[in-house]
Length: 133
Image 1 (cartoon, rainbow, N blue to C red):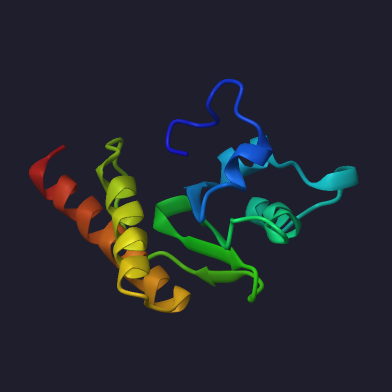
Image 2: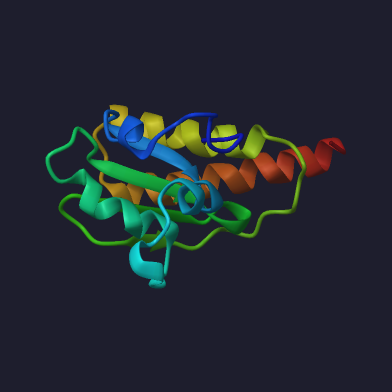
């Protein structure tokens, strides 16, 4: 999910993946809270869908690169962002997703993956600011 929900994409399509990474707003759009109840995070609505599906984790990025994750075994994990300047570039988000993928490949824990994703997001944002992008 970087550009939002794909046309005709269904919630069931996402449960076929191992891990889904996207923005909070994207999850809120595709998986609204049932019965109008409030969720502290849009990815919480994905938790019941994990049971009996391939999906084992859902990760979202929040404002300034905050990390949130729910898994089959653990409730919400939130790691606040590092100070990162605002940028209109997609590069920090790509860096965030890349850090999640590398952490998974190295079989790191979700807390370590989250810390690295937020750190890399901040570094890339700062680099873009320094470049004047």
